[in-house]
Structures are given as C-alpha cells and as structure tokens.
Length: 494
Image 1 (cartoon, rainbow, N blue to C red):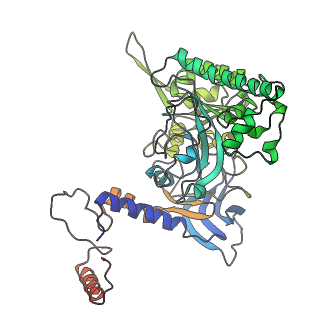
Image 2 (image 1 turned 135 degrees about the horizontal axis):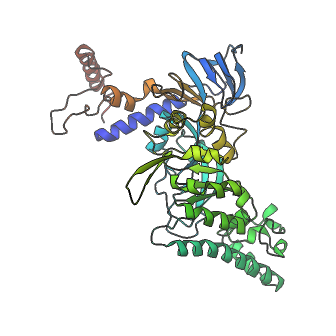
Image 3 (image 1 turned 180 degrees about the vertical axis):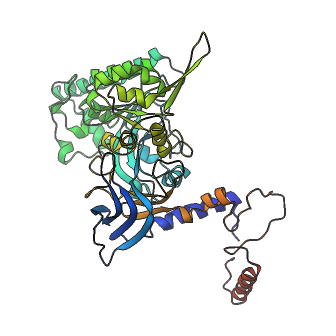
C-alpha cells in the first residue's frame, strides 16, 4: 500500500483538480456567455456579451455573436468577463530565484521553473494568466527570463515567450557595496568589449582558436551562425566584428552582446532612489536604454522626474503605498506611489506584492480606492505590462485576434466582494473555483477525501473518509464493493 502524508495527499488532489479542469474544454471552439464583458481599459463594456474563441484566439466578441453548434459553451449570465491579468515581473515559481555567479546572463530561468509550484496554482485563483518569470534581485547580471502561462505540466506547455529579457540590478547584492556593485556592472560590459576586440585581432592574425573552441563545445556553426555581421547598437562598437562568425562567439557573452546591440530587453532592479541614476547610466552607456524597464521599489518614486526624462517604463514592486517617517518628529506620511508616477507621466505596471492577499487584483483595487481612474488602474495590470513584455498584440484585452485569456468574476472585477470564478487560458478552462479543494478547505472547512480534518490533531483518532461525503449508508456500500473486489483479486491495494 502506498502511504502519503495528509499534506501530500492534499497537494496531489489540488494539483490534479486544476490539471483536469485545464484540459476539460475542447481544443477547438469555446463560447463564453457572460452577463457583462469588460473588454479592457477604456474600451466599451458589453451587456450580455458573447466571446467566441477558436483554436485559442478570440474569433468574435459582442452582444449578437452567433454560437456555432459544435462549440463548448460556458453559460455565465451572472458573471462578468474580464481580460486575464498580466504579471510583468515575478521571481516566484522557481526552485531558487538567485544565482551566485556574476554575470549569469547565459543562464535561463527555464532550468529553474517548477511547473507544480503552488505559485502557479495561486496565480490562477487570482486571475493571472501571463507571467514574466525573472531571477531575483540579489544579483549583478542575472539569467534570462521567460514568459509563461500558469498551466501545464511541462515547461513547453507553459511557455508563451522563450526569452523575455535579462535581469540586472543597480542595488548592491548581499556582501557588496554600492561602489562594488557599480564596478561589477561596468566590468561585465568592459570585459565583453575587450573579449570582442581580442576575437577580431586573433582572426586578423590567422589564429583559429575561437572556431576550434566552438567545435569542441559542439556549437552550431551552420546557417546564420556561420556568418559574421558588423556590430549594431547605439553606444560603443567593435570594428571588424563582421569577420567573426556569430557561432564562434562564446555563449557566455552572447546575451550581453544582444543587450548592447539592442536586441534583448533589460529589466533593471532599483531598490533605492539613488540606484535609478546608476541603472540609467549603465543602460545608456551600453546602448540598451531604449529596451530597458526599471523594476523599482516604492521609495523610488522620488526619482520619478529622472525616470520620466529617460522615457522608460517601470514595474512597481511591492505595495502601492510608501510610508515615510520624519526622523525628527516621528510623524508618518503615506505616499500613493502610482499616483506620483502618473503625475510625472511615467508608464507603470503593478506587480503582486505576494501571491495571496496582495495580488494584481488587490493592487489595482487599491489604486481605484485611492482616487485613480478605473481605466488607469486596469491598464497597469493588463495592457501596459503586456506592452512591456512585447505581447501587446496578444494579451491584455479582449479583442478579436488576441489570446482567449478570459476571467469570469462573480461581480465587479475590482470590488472587494468579487471572486474569480473561472479562468480560461487560450480557450481552455484552467480554473474553476467550485472545484478548488483548497478554497473549500479554507472557506468551509471541508477537507479533501483521505486527509486530516481541519483543526484535527495528528495524534487523535482519525475518521476514515473514503467516499465523497460522509453518509454512513454510502460508506457501507463502498466498503461492501471494495470487499467484493478483494475477493475477486481486484483490490486497489497490491
């Protein structure tokens, strides 16, 4: 007999339920009939609307859309349809968010993401359908991130965009000062420049060391990789790089070169206002300012003027309210950070402060509660993060041609009394609150079958629960059926 702990059984049941619901809908056509459809920020709302999704994309949306006879239908006349939330930056869902080496741009979070991490389960509960997974802030130059959907049992099933950008940090990592952090950032790009110059000189001297090394490592030297091209970019350049087949360039340097050439986005973390200046300086000096997004702490609102001047978007990490304490009087002042960013015309996306009580829904609702327009609040968790990730034509709103990522709320989407009842990702039902065993356990105290009852003691006598429900008559029938199976050699326990 297989023996599981109560917590292991609960985890298996919860994950299984979510996976079953994710594959329940047909792959072809899905029609969602909602009491109201909120298409996106600033877009008209549709009463008694229908969203038709075919092969994962929205094929039609409106009040008079005809539902094909062969479509699966979700009939939700009391629910409100809303576009899936977009998380522009998150370091969750991995077995380890930070790396010890500097720089580590040649690494990818793909090798660290855990598809059954509870974070992805929580994301579905809160309606987050697109997530940019990046490494943590305790780095100099971290690995490459990727955009995923929070459903699927393999990385390939989850993948939306294989490379979303490289993570850097202007804030000192553990054990480093501001000066050594800045030196490490400059050194990484200085080493890149010197390495490329050495490659060019060796090629001119007839030294074929780089090619031999590439062949030894099994790198692809065919097709485009067999060709050289002049270095691109708006900052420094290395003359003669067209002599070097791109496949001969060390793979550890390739992502940094892509940054400098403006071909790869950068997510630059700034934990303090002073770090904003450093991040913008490094990005500007190395030619990737135009493709930089700052990931800022609430305190960085003080550098809003500098951010606005640079014209870069930001992802606000943490709470939307920053509390300052006067060092002399001890008086506390609350600063509504998104409001300050909006005043300076800084494009910003919100991020979840945590996976439960302060997810994107909560963050946007707080913004509305503090006076921000609903249009701006919704944009900060849908269309703006989608644009930051280069996915503005795919996700962020409910429009024909975009991915069929739809949330069904029990009421007004940003109301504290509303819940996400269903989540559809690319035309497949990914979450159903009515089948969420963890929610039932938390809200109603209903423990999943074969687990310890809520509030029960591990040392106390355990009540056997092997059927759905606890009706004695049904339980007796079940035991009788199991006994007959054993007599025939068909018992479950071998």
